[in-house]
Length: 242
Image (spheres, rainbow, N blue to C red):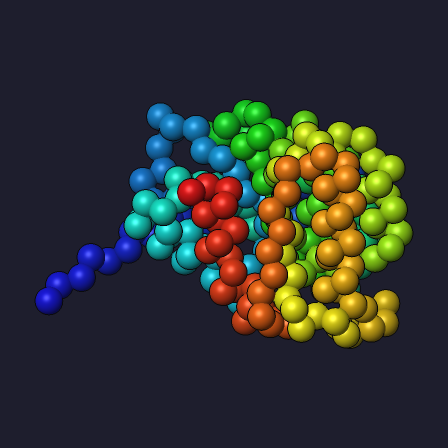
């Protein structure tokens, strides 16, 4: 019995000099199998890029789903980060948070749209992240809704101040959002103490609904670990690209 081997996309490493961050930043850009300049592709911008490649196995998953024609071809931009800078860049109160969002919206998007065959509209750009990466994904979309039309958060490390921010934000109703959280995430140890992320994500869901966002909210029977985020990634990809 023969089997057809899944065609593989290509991952290319780029170093981008950032004016906003004052650093040279790594990006790992995935192009799908049979990538062609004759087509325009949606783009997924992924926080914690190294983790989504190694622990989430996202490039392999994209190959599989595209190969089975469960999703359309998509470009994925993996954005690695130094763990010591996560809170500074990802948390809304972080010292680099505003600069990091500008870096994403202005410098990264400009580079990708210039060098790859992309759909030029914000509706074809999505952000993805887990925990604090989910927070910065949502808040970047809230800040730049015309640049990023969609965002997905896996077990977002939300808090009451962030929920309040959303309730007073403008343009929320322009966004297409996906939130998920584990039913066992009621006492998650973080640098900010023990958080009930199950309750926090439901509060964020309610705030986003109140502001008119297009929102899909899901739960899973698990905790705040990559085991569950990896398992639920196909559902997210099918939602946006199926």
